[in-house]
Image (cartoon, one colour):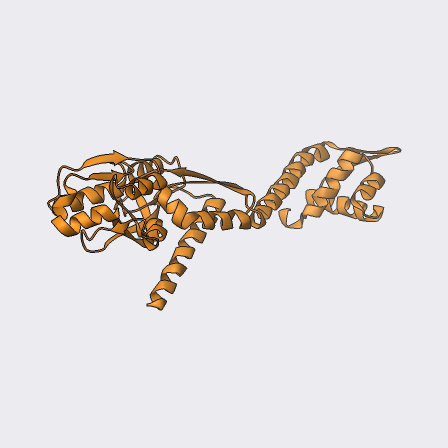
Length: 305
């Protein structure tokens, strides 16, 4: 039976049910009346049942017609749902929820997100700032679709997609640099380490490097933004460890300089996803665009060198 049925027959059947007339159904569908008659006859043959009582002023469904109407409406609804689903592939809709460090957003992601929203205007991007520990927590609790962290967490329940290797530098005022050149690294013992706080990986890395260099007793000052940290360093309040890209302009303009504290420091940023999270289509689009972008950027950088 099922192989004899076509969607257009159900559509015609529903039109006749609702209009109570073959002629009015034909007008509604843009058919000639003979086409409507043919569709109903083919349905009746497939069902081996009479579907309508022909009356002098129209038609009424038989018991078989009433039963078929339930399935016909379901079929039409399924077709509409399928059409909507396919339309979403052309104009995807939904919300992508991601958490990352402020510095990474400002230097690497703002233009990418703008480009993504321009390409998929019906997708909303919900962005939150955070540091590695709380980003991991949010991803592990399925509170966000993705996180971008400055270091591979090496967890079995997370998938880590490396994006790029970021160079980190210690920055300090010219006066502090001169003090180090004159007295050596011990000049940093009484200086203030400025950072986003102990939850920030940059603070942890800086503290470890200072300890390995024999520099101890640094007091710490926490600020919520990159601009506040840079301004404090300019004023000679202390020194900080930040991604080089965040301070490139200030270094070129000699607002502050880099401390010759250790060999180059690198941090591998990556996108993390919970291993068991089933990504919806907008999230898959976002992930693909981000990973592909940084893969291309890395490949081009290697070609230059």
